[in-house]
Length: 363
Image 1: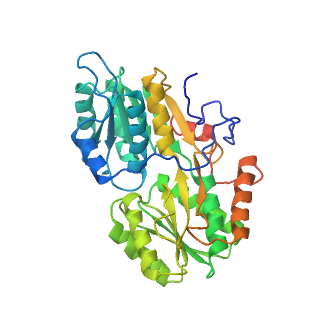
Image 2: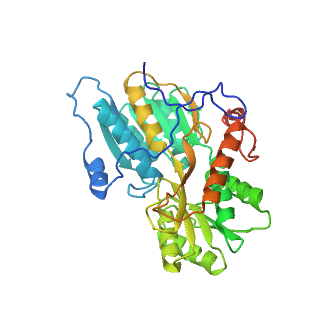
Image 3: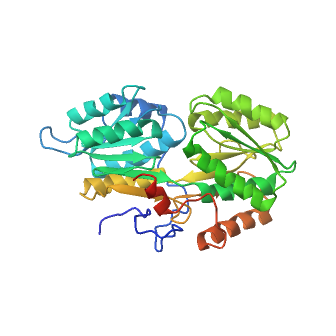
């Protein structure tokens, strides 16, 4: 049997519940991307070098942001690299500059790369254009809802799992003031914020929620500055989605010290600041990317849209364990209870669209 990732497909019901889906209950064990690995990935293709001239499979990873973000760029690459290593095929990373996205993809195609794996909304228009121009090449675009004849979109709808993050923040704050710091004010980042707000209101509608936007996914200094303003304004629990910028949130919490909490996003950041990281909003992009690459190499490629959600286990609130941060047992129990109630449909997250609604936006 071919390995298939348990993502949602077009036959999913409106609530996006998928019976029998593979569960991802803990962070994959693939190692994090080191700076040396990042440099090597850009300088020379990884994996088993195949003989030239034999039409072998090769993967190009195109990103508008640099490796080393300790976030989505790294976690997607981690999965692609693991899949390519297992399949014995090449992967090459291109950190494309703005205005050169299409040129970068076409250059990789001209060198024989027959799977273009792109990431982030900034590349969407270029991916769609190049895919139409190269019908014999396969394209996967992560972290963005899209689809096409030879294009597979993979996105994460985070509202349900973000709801759980909001519940945790609301149950932890002692000041009844929490915050959200976003990288860029766009629809993708708002999915985190929308679910977060619902979860906070579910616990206590009187909690004050402060929101700010960094304006970049690569500006940790600005993120730290904004986070410090929130903390100084009475916030004691803060969450953010900002790519590399989010690293500044941990610096701010560290500077404030005990009693000031931060929550991670995308990858497992629970070890980053002992005693102050409550949880991480974990998205298993590495597991998804690895399985997609292996399936494609095995000849299984299904254009369309795949979605990572709380129900299929690819996005969830990963609580810090007892050695990482002290969290009362009643809070841990409530987080687990709310998670199961969302999965069962007992709690409906209003900001979470149905699969059909998502697809309708792409028609």
